Image (cartoon, rainbow, N blue to C red; front, top):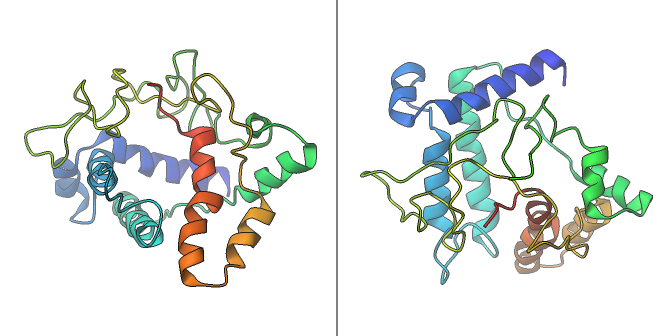
Length: 222
């Protein structure tokens, strides 16, 4: 990407955090959807412990593709020149494997947690640089379709994080870096694509090709 392409995408994406759905549709049209609405939709489909429709099994690919298509439609409503760039994180994953480093080496080989992209964090897991610095966490409202956590925030039902800001806790589960949850590398995606049945593919693509990256980079502080 050129710097201009990156800046246009980030500006459009940041609008989804800054403008609610009602206001945004009045300004940008019916395809606009705010990030707060996306967060609620994700919670509605995934916060049922008996039936997570977004993760594992048959729901993973279809729901994620639908969510991505809706996100792209929304940012293109803001700026028709942009689209979500594809991040092939297996490149960084392979670099980590080749260097024989732990997963946290991702910060050395990826630019995405810098002020130029999505921002670095402080010791409280708050984003402190980039357009996402100190963004408030979505709260439920009278029109919400999901239940909040104990502090009124739209987080996963098991996540009782009371922090009013978006948080990102890197490479840490209960104070330990789980080195067995590696950043997926080329061999991991190759293995998934060698699945002999649709059922095996549906079971392995979330757990081997996708989910470990969330453990590495997206855990909210409890």
